[in-house]
Length: 261
Image (cartoon, rainbow, N blue to C red; front, side, top):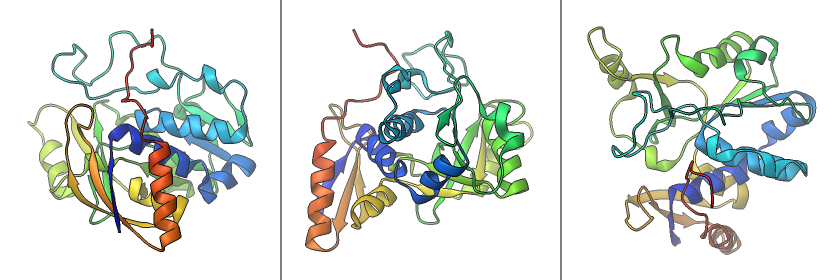
């Protein structure tokens, strides 16, 4: 068994690399449609999928603004929903149909045309790791992108994959928390537990290396805020592969929506 520290940024990149080779996503990229709903973790997934596809315009993908709402420190001034005052650089969601990127499209443009075999990727804000469930914060009065996605997921058996980092683990019951936050008279954001395939750094390591990982501690400073400690075990070759993979990602910089100088 080996131990590793995984920062949120490393986790996002790790999840991205794994989902770029996920069998269901690969199948949908070739024969159907993949909708990657905007979100910070999903931006890394887009980059890894584009790299795997050999897209020459990958460098033009604006990952730093690939989100609708984000959680920022109190020192930042944003709307109550976490949206930036200037959203002019928001590129829309990423919709890929039979290997072709439908630039400028959002899930709202294509949801009625999705069918069984297609895949939607949508991030989350709360993770119940024990039961492999996730929930999404809701600010939009009509439920936002997840309610659009569920029309296809429930109505037409489109696959929903939920990439979510381990730093979003919570200890409470998601349904009970949602009942409190969504009750008449409550204020602030709402919470929506959703069905779907939860996919964390643990799943990413299993897919890419065959190794099993367990979360056993969390926290850090000086850039490791939100980091997690993983105990990774398996055959010697699997542990070695996991170590090499995580070492290759060790210099992944923290996420920032600010432009690089």
